Length: 404
Image (tube, rainbow, N blue to C red; front, side, top):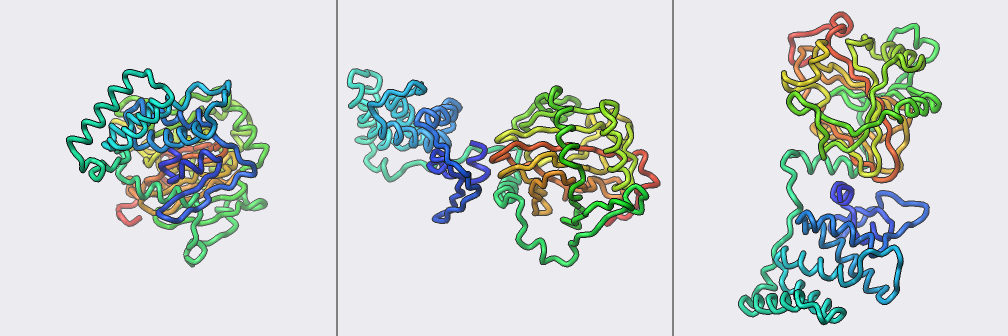
């Protein structure tokens, strides 16, 4: 349902195994699989029932409609994997339509149900109730309620967020902006003189750059392997506590640099490229995150926006910068969307994304509000290195100017 909403996916298409975004009469293929895997009638029923049980008829109705349609097409065939039947789907869909205010559809489906199960007294009573309601209000058919998508009160930037996710990270005007460029980066570091890093400036305000091929395939695989045994459900700071939440669905693990010498080398490379001190307590340990299908992180800041945030327990100030390494490729979805800056960056395997979270004055940069779009197809792995204010005084001097 999350993928359906964020990517505006067509339920009939999903049931056939295709990923199509439908806007009005336009149909766009977001991803074309090499082989189609269709959902069964029972699959569609189970998805619809999850929404139905939550009272979410906006999502329940199209999935139950598809289940009814598929069950009708195979009526009489017995399939061992089916837990539900046409009668179950009709029963749930009829009541969902009634709850949504469409009494005429509820009546029609209930009558169809009685054709297959004429002895069901509960459904017979429902038919009488629906007929009475329509008799009392003959205009009922014209006054059907419009089913609204359930509100998510904590996210006011949903339209921008979803629009950026739907581009899958593609930026059609990116190469038409002269101030954005590519270069070989050494940052005047002897460490990088013989092997400069390929740098792509993605945005200027906020300053966001992508370093291509920052890690090798073997390094990315090793980091994933080191983290895998320690993965746990990701949490977020809520007041002074750390809690799992629906708006962040992933697993994560923290890796100390003492776990493997390769992590020390990685720290040296990050320090050389950014010019910052990345040793604890001036930076956090490497956080490795895995997002499965539907895994996401809705718009958030990496830096603390409250003085009570657990981030300050390190006693090294706020997070001044984020260095995020993509440890895998993703077939579709999973882009990093910067909401207020209005651009998104696709997952580029082995590349690293870097941005400043704070202005030089120490104030948080509101334009760094960003999100991890849901993974549509594939498996997304990233490694985050969060660098704090303290220890960077002479590496990134502060400024009293709010423009800096």
